[in-house]
Image 1 (tube, helix red, strand yellow):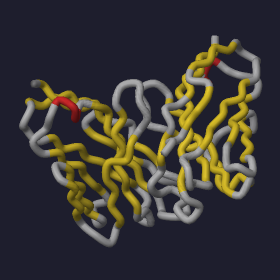
Image 2 (image 1 turned 90 degrees about the vertical axis):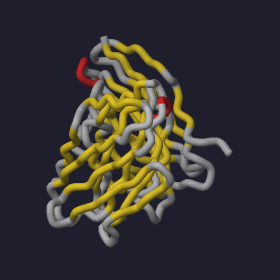
Image 3 (image 1 turned 120 degrees about the horizontal axis):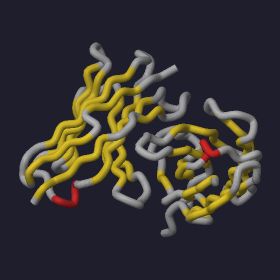
Length: 112
Length: 114
């Protein structure tokens, strides 16, 4: 089955700096890669997702890149703000076929 | 527009007891998935319900069972509780055609087994 590794487990950045979180997956058939943000005590929220037919997707300050050959994908947050502080989870699946398999999460702290 | 609602928000049980958790999906959604999130871990898939049937199941024992009602709401039942069942149980809803896409999560039920 699919296995998703996520790094780093914790990340601290200064406000205004960029943050990068990386994930690797094991199943080459996986083709759907979402990212979820979970603030303390709140529900996970989908912030961006990418399919294997594209290499990059952007939404304002957030971008995700995908390298299918290397089986890894990354979340990039630019101009970080204190409200970006949360736990971020990556996940992988075969769209419409298998359930999401999540990484263990990255706790991002943005220091004002 | 109401999102995914789960009840109760917190629950304390003792080993060997049984528990039922409830979930109402986001308006317009017809598929419900249940996840277990242990402390410091990512959510782990338990099972998914669509059209009142279990469509997919993760690597969880038969002590975990579920049900979906005609109004798309769902229940998760856990029998013979173990200490290791202590976790946040998340319900996520989606449209039937997107088995695992655009999942909309509830805030979860925090289960503590003593």
